[in-house]
Length: 303
Image (cartoon, rainbow, N blue to C red; front, side, top):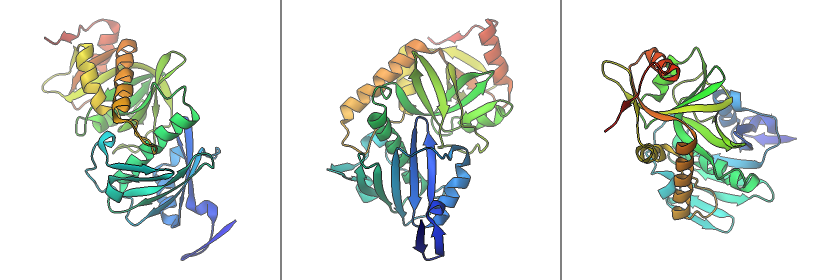
């Protein structure tokens, strides 16, 4: 099949980018093949030939680059849904959705890559709830760096500038899943961590998953690496801030979405070891983690 465009006759495949995000696949189609080429190169480890759960025709009038948009937290995004039509961020993102036909059309204006990422977060949660409703309860996107070492996953959670990309860079001898956004999900009774296409500054990430060994809430250290034990309440309070809310392209009940997040965080706290890690900008924090696992280092307790 051919499509006539300003640049001449182009195969429709040149305008399509099929993207694997955890358990779902979406096909992104652009009128301008330059956008497809850009994403295929940027997200090449997540490109797939699997059948798409949703095909999205995307129109943009901005450059999908690193421009920061300072969009509000997704759970509190301005949102309007009327039948199959949706509109977010006061018209920044608008479109139509028909899940039965596996088709969506989306129009972006004005803000760049952040708006695109927020939209894709919504696409992920939409497809999880529609295609995998039984698995969506304990399956969330989290702002975190994840590293697979000896087949086990370590997650380093923190807000912007907390050191996620630094952790990734210092862990390059291992398999770095992502330095910005990961999937944490419960599978057959145990939590695993998986990569996503939504990365930060670290470019050499891998599209893999691993059993979740431990979660570290990270801070930059001063003078030495410190691993602290913290209460479940403190962990949940800090961890939930980095969980990306399950906002979908449907109408979303904010209270129910928050309760889903809270239940998820509480279950993670019950199932996965968690600590605070204050780390120096060198590889020695892994030595501290090794000592902790061998029992040679006792965590400093918070008071």
